[in-house]
Length: 573
Image (cartoon, rainbow, N blue to C red; front, side, top):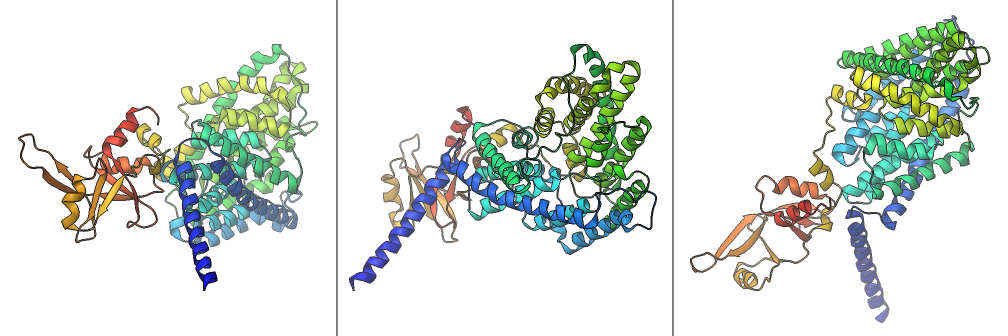
């Protein structure tokens, strides 16, 4: 009979140990500070996110090989089935959209940004399938969209889904989500540092040390995963970049002005098309985008795809100026039609193509007046790519670091920084340009603004502030005795309607007997943040909320308005 007793005791000990370590983990993750637990979880989730992105990339490579869209010999031949691939892609995207739920039709970087800002990065898992297959069809059928859009969405969904499954505190769910984004970008471009900067500059929009290390670990994981499968490839290292003399910098400044104007024009046109087609039926928008892309492909197939074809033309041995100009307009139109009319995908790839063409055109035009510029066409190409991405996405540092990693050449740093400054000033001050992602959110009617106090409170979980000294009373007869012996502890009581009330004794000033006060008290899960407690308590500037674990009956702490106000005034958030 002794053995079964020991088994029961061991099982109970295991349950107690699991609960203890789960609570310890939640306590650590609720803090707004770096911890080994946070880094380990980010790394584990990044492995999963990287695998999803690599699966997407492998399927895309297979699709591109099978459809042979890498060859461009169908110019003017409408009978060639490859010329009609965009129309086929539009139909396939529409079918996937119709098969999916209307509740999960939103996707892309702007939508992820909205979820990170207002919902702690919690993205519905059901949206992942639509993003995966629609983006696969869009890229596989040669629409002018980039790979980073699906990489960011899928990376965010993968990490946030696991974080919710592990029932992590909401403040750490957001960190896991942005870490998944970093893993997705790094696994797509083999650019880990650019992934870190992009997440901090565009998605999080602030620098916190407890964000930085999980994001950095995730980016390393994504880059290593990419290198294991595809090799240590720098996609743009084929561009010949030479160190430019200082006497060329006045010409670079003029180029910065031109690039700023071009970026402002592109952003305005894209947002105008997006706003115009917002209420059109989806099938009409997709077919129109497919038709425009098909027509452009029949004349200038180099304008199709993510931007690789356009970059190839820009850095070719003897590029034709007229061809590059025609290709620039075709690429801009194809990108505006695809993104503006709802084809799922990113902007970075097409912006690289547009920027490369602009840079090459600037170099060739300048070389007509100053022949010494001719050897630096490759550098001008990279500068154009940096400026277009940086200005259009309001991410100058991410753009610079991305091109630095992808070209594997540090000589681009100084001239790219020099050109980006006038480009930004022209676009953002001269033409009132804004980040294209936030403008897209405005058009879609999605909010992204959070008050500073709320944003600060979202960084800490309720477990960091809850008072664990409390008493629950279930018997009215014992209530008075418990209150007398509470000794500063909160006293809660469940009323006949199964609603918890906060009970206390108030001493009147006229020396009469103490008065018993009781008022209903709301509950919050221990995975929520201090912001949810603030939302409940701030209207009355008084009261308390109780914190429960798993179910409202399992109360683990209490937070008062006084404690919350003290935390806000302390300057620690």
